[in-house]
Length: 97
Image (cartoon, rainbow, N blue to C red):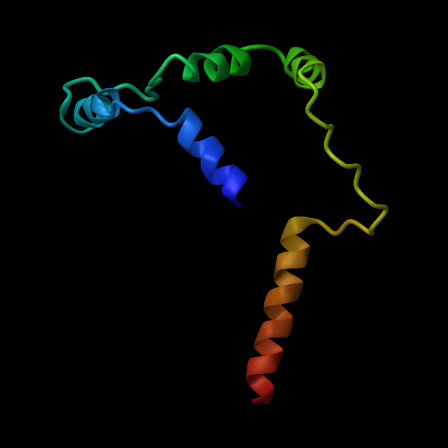
């Protein structure tokens, strides 16, 4: 946990004026932007997000981040059906009590 706190402290910006300025513009500006890029490090995310998926995947692997773990062969149930099943079992529990 100490490592995470030290890392967050090392990348945290000391000057909050750009953040406050962006908030003010978003709230009170005549034409607010849909997204605000604050700081030079944020441009890396913006540039990467604008690239095709295959390039993003290649870049993540090239930087040494591990790939997502593969799913197990669990039986897949569509989300809507699974949600209704959970709701039905919840309602039955309530009805019993």
